[in-house]
Length: 219
Ligand code: AMP
Image (cartoon, rainbow, N blue to C red; front, top):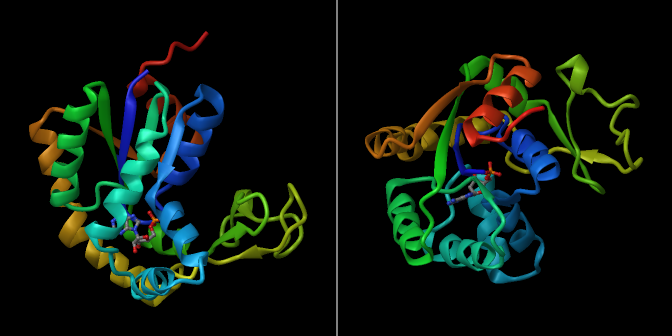
């Protein structure tokens, strides 16, 4: 099975697909957003800085995120991995290239999830996450609404919005994405590593497409 790197705008669905692959195929899912949200919860100067930048829709400095990410990557023992949230810019992509060389990783594919801006906005501003089991909901889409308002179907914990899932921060994050992350499309195209998946398809179609890309055999 191939290792996967997702590049996609905020809330394009990379987290949901990653969770599916993690459970079905035993992938190790590394989300740099989750790593940073954990740092944010610590009562530390670093946590405060991360929180401030996230609230502003800014990227966190490479000097902070890259060592934290490397630590997680090195914990994987021969499992295939999914990178969700990294690289976010060309410098991070070059860092990954070097790290992969060091670790002898060649077998990877970069999946670019393409999605329209209007749909993205609803996905971001309507997203709610369970405080307990982390299941994701969306109050604007019937298929993703909780059965009881603001309560998780799975574990009964309360749902909450991420600190950066509001309209103002969404606009800043989208801007950042265009400026810093979109150039990665070209970068990986030139390396022949890029495939495109349309987020407007049904969840089942998306999953089937991704399964073909990562080369799992369906029976
Ligand atoms: P995500 O959960 O991937 O949407 O990330 C949430 C926020 O965490 C982003 O808006 C950034 O502020 C920060 N972040 C996540 N990954 C990175 C990264 N690779 N480099 C810099 N900042 C990041």
